[in-house]
Image (cartoon, rainbow, N blue to C red; front, side, top):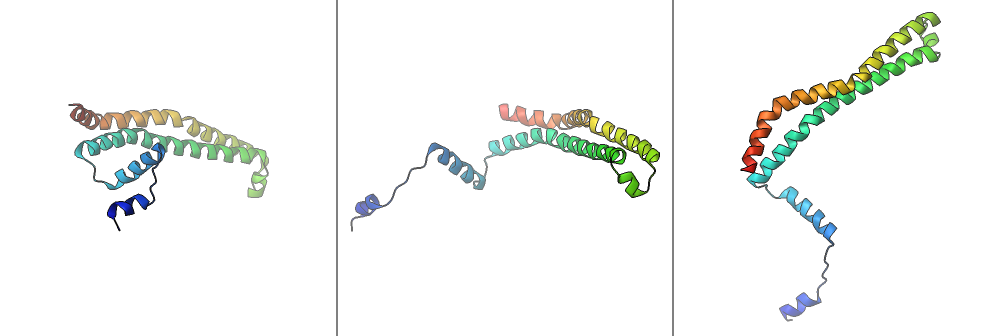
Length: 137
């Protein structure tokens, strides 16, 4: 058989632009990066790490504060105090105290986020600026 004949009788499929982009993304994961791409990726990763750590700390503090606030509310509003063997007046005082502590912790989440973000920016600024200057020149 003729070689040209075999190729023309085979199945051919063209992918859409969206599928082509997906194919390129998958292929790029497995090809070794060039020096410029790896430095750009490092710059992106460093920039993202600034807020990622701050988000993790703030979320943890906010969730912990909300759980403690809920515990205080449970002591006041449910039979939890009775089941624990605590008197109602004592449960009210303990519940309010625990709830206030939880509320304070939850409300500190945003200021802690700002503080951690600021500290991380100061820490990583020289490295990020040096990488950005190197890539721009």
